[in-house]
Image 1 (tube, rainbow, N blue to C red):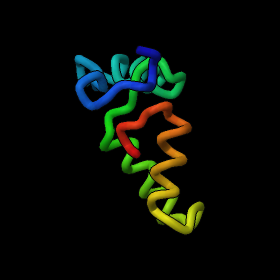
Image 2: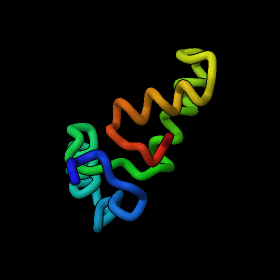
Image 3: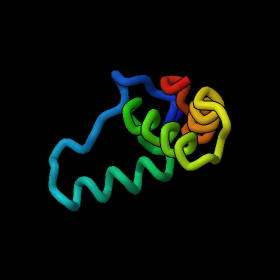
Image 4: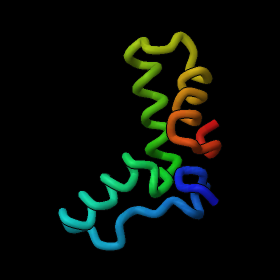
Amino acid sequence: MPAGTGTLRNARLPEHPDAKSTARWTRDALAGRVPLPPPITNLLACCLFATGYTDDFNQAKAIVAVRTHSLAVA
């Protein structure tokens, strides 16, 4: 399965909550090497909609799904 196409089962947060592990996970997530957990993708959609970037929440969810290569948010 390509990176970024996982479901909640495949989306994992860093194993250790220390700064170094979190920074590495964030870097990998931004690069698309690890899938984002659905709560984070949903938060991104909320931000797009709340800021007026989209007129419709479903459109915001679709944009996030495409950009993150994750259908879990759709």
